[in-house]
Image (tube, rainbow, N blue to C red; front, top):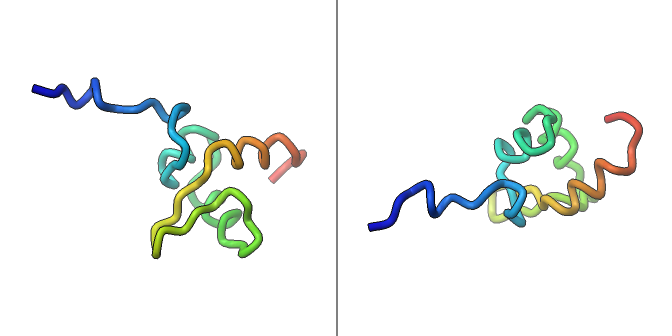
Length: 69
């Protein structure tokens, strides 16, 4: 039998994150992440039909650049 906790991948090991996971990971609110990723030229968003995923490594790169968001 598989234990659900043993199959859980830590957020910092995932390549793509949901908005909720991204908010936990980056400590930025979901609404602000949604606002930032709505732009067509956003480099850290991945659309799977209507599902929005955040590319963790690209988000890290983006957050290292600006002084404030």
